[in-house]
Length: 529
View 1 (cartoon, rainbow, N blue to C red):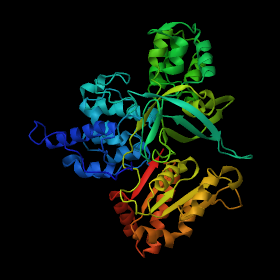
View 2: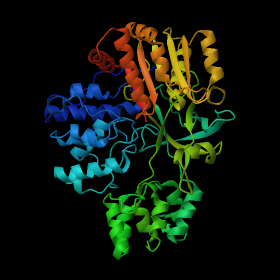
View 3: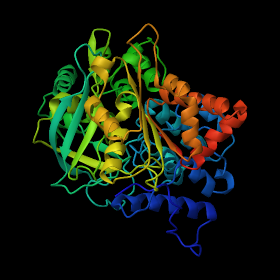
């Protein structure tokens, strides 16, 4: 099964239904997203296509839909627009699907009251949550009074493993380190067995992991809380609730509010200011849940109230790096283990270190497949594809290549891959060299940023090969980029504009229009985080 390019919006709500055109358009998009969960061939629209079909006040091109743009700039662009558009501008603009929507439909669902949870935009974090709450209060909606943790209205759960609300259990198989000696990174090839749960997927999809917190961190939190690990919290022990259900990252505003209720004097004042988003002591960026408990060590919090004040532990999404057509019943991910220090304290990513060290082969893990939104192989297998994926951004393109090989797609394939050092950071080197030797990979262009005096990145290699790259585009090639939204993806787009201007003998303005048209046509697709 190959992923289709975005199809026209499925008309679920008939024109005779008692809704305005704008309401009918939104409902059609919402139900199209639900129907896509069962792999029925319905594909959610890309942001550009949503803007094209939503008509009226919402036919505005969404100029803020840029993940590299700061939230203040995005909100400035949305001034004077209807509430759903202002909410849309407050989202992280990554269309990652982690919330169960894309940015535009999540915003519409909040504005309409269909979604009561305001804190689902994981990439946006506190910044987005605060902006959304302020907009809801300003908009005077009944939903504004709903706390972030309010459950959404009941909705069809769909088949197991097709949504974050109804995960399936997959068996963890193995992990294999991809870095060689001397690497500054820790990257793992991770595999799951899907045979028992029966899940399938198409390349371009993402895989949701319901990871657990590190028990060492949980035990440290419980110790500072001064509670018993087996204290009952809604039918679970405190320790189990903190391991499986609650986020222990950045301390939420609700925790600071709780602390302000049980303290007094200067301590209460500081807690209130932190809850309002201020930074009275200049340490807000270091205050995860453990840090907040340490800072306010005199606060006596009950286990139940403490757990209620924490955000739910969100699933994490990873680009799939395998093809169901090539390896049915098995799925793989390419995962950077996130480890760093703030001051003397080590920090680690929840899901990445869960996959890198804590889950054991044979264990069952709650998972789901998140359908791609406008990111996948062309419908025509003869179409050439150009893929730009440095670091773990190579993940979906490994999947693309395995899929093109399994389906015997005749189209040309060009991969730009880069990292720090060739000897230690060339992920899947043997595989890619073999694909190049057999002719599956027409071009394999590499960039290493730490192998010489000059740092070379994938965008530099794009400029070097600009004439050939532009010729491929003129032949109808699709271009893909996967990786960091704030810097790499923006630099790649800048390089694309520059080479189009140079090779096509266009002005910068015309080159921007050319790239914009590629995006509108689904020929320039991004999977960014």
